[in-house]
Image (cartoon, rainbow, N blue to C red):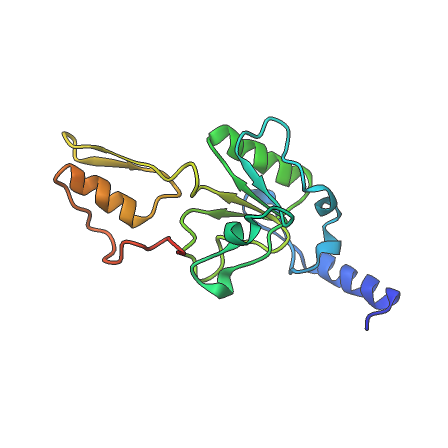
Amino acid sequence: MMNERNQTESVLSVKNRRTIGPLGFISAPLPYSHVLPALANMSSPPESFTGDWITADHPSYSKAIARWAANAEHRAAAVAFVKNAQDVAIVLNHAKQHKLPIAIRGGGHSPSGTSSIESGIVIDLSRYLSGVTVDPTEKLAYVGGGAIWETVDKTAIEHGLATVGGTVNHVSSFR
């Protein structure tokens, strides 16, 4: 059992080992939610956010943090299902303001765990930014960041085209 002095030493130790990650966000060895005091008020999304903001008290939280590989699943403080670039900017600014680590989830097929973060914010593209549009004349596909190969394959096939991507079309899926 940790006493108050040991907890303080542990927090100081963690704070001293933190690193600055991409985009200048602080990434600390976690789970140490007491290191990130801003997590206490994560139940409400940032102002002007139009997507879905899921926290641990939400009924779909378990599904929101689920990943293809169990070892890549982390308990995020919030999962932000963004609808557009403006939502992404709002969440990034919110995370930066509160010094919260972030992770970006495309399709969730990251066995190393980069699509999830313990006690931080996951910016999830899979719910609203997973569409695929094909221009058959130019033979180009416009693929949302949250799309899985299955969606790309099926949309390409509708236009008599095929992809040269992976052979397992559920890649980036965790069904």
